[in-house]
Length: 304
Image (cartoon, rainbow, N blue to C red; front, top):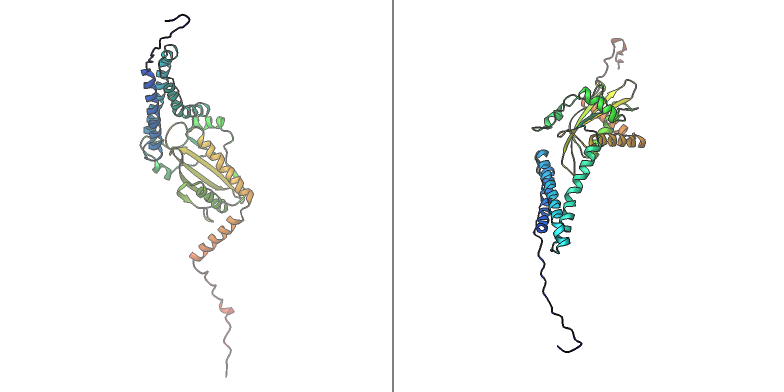
């Protein structure tokens, strides 16, 4: 070595890959398809929601476990220089895809009253009949709302009351039926108001487009004797003791849609009602003619 020169020896450094980081990323990757499978089971497989809920709970546990393993792997990566930082970020972001929806559901669960059956008439709630046939094993009973639940609903949702519509039940029935069709709800059965029986009711089956959860509802029309109609609605979840506020939201939106229709006028429904009444008259056949009285019969004039 000559004077004034300095030589440096090159070295090869190898960094160990963090095995916990690999495990954390693998768990996070597994949690996503498990969560997606729970959605498919609930929405398309027509299985009981409890199965899908357990599947989604498994996805949450896997995602949380991935984060715990990531926390355990972090010190070795940060202080010891092990490889795996990108894997930790990947595990964290994938875990968010599962845990954020879970946190949203938890927020609504703890910030909404725990109801599964709501009615706008707490003194005389509409009674389910055909809707009970939609029940599966372990579904809610759909029996009369208990006195305790009525008191709790009155405190939690004081705005949920029946609606007085200043039109006869036959006309309101056509409006309500139109809204049911536009909402895509399935009509299980109905009793249309008539001159003999002015009261009517419609039982409905509803399935959530997103989650696939099943609900039932009943809309009751009562004639108040003054050419007006009292409209009551009862909406219930077929499964689960907590509806996350969806039944109350459904009733509010339905009544808001009714107000919008009423504001637009009911000329179309009046024409429909006239056509229905005309068809009913045709089914009964022509009206019988009155037989003339003997005194009203005029003798034929003689000719010739």
